[in-house]
Length: 372
View: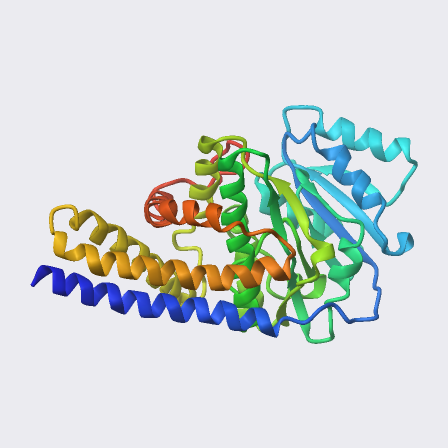
């Protein structure tokens, strides 16, 4: 009877997960490419902490954007760096005599969201765009993101992908990140915005002010929270930019430990979802992985469970490959079948364990606890 009960629970969770994947796949087909002809003055804001090895690169890339140079500014806000980030950013702006680049520092507050909120308060742009100092920003990024702002749009999420090295671990990480970007794009396309990456987002400053930015608990909120606040408060629709020429790239974590710290930090959302329906949906998706891992373990002592567990793993893998292949084509990325299969071996325990540990972890940014 135990194996039958577990099988029934697994099948129920599987059906929900397949419906979730279908929403992603359907949403990918509904995405539209940038078509707005307007070019309002825009502000690119970057929150930094201890980024001396990266800051000049991202500033140089922003200086060379294809967007009209008279119609955007760059604001760097430093969050109490302990290295030469501020000096290098200031020196770079001075060396090219570019008044569009300004550098500020947080005083009383701390944290990435606080730094971004400060930058927005100092900005002159009608549109706000954010990226990270450790990212590679293509020349057409700003132009492409601004082109997504039809009159009804308040928030735009852009594609972000990891650049793998030659190591297998790095390549598996890149596949996992591709799945996150594909999920973000598909869910937004289907009208259910849940996740996005702060390395490439844009929003109307008026919408940011309308929803009171990150809210009162600014240090514990993130870009997904901001997106969801805009949806809940009718500050405009959410769009995803599927333009492959606007992909912002970042390096994969340098080792397994760094990867694990990053992903468990992302999972440390706890009660930060203002929309309870989002939390319920993510809990059901997580429940599928948690129950599947549990059934996998029980099957070690209850062999009759192996058949349903293997069948469900196959259904899961085939469905995910179907969806991820569409994302790979959209973003012009390779998806080697062998690497995907290796990633599938670790997918269930990774999600189940990381999600659980994340709920007992503090929200951290640059080696600091940001919980209040």
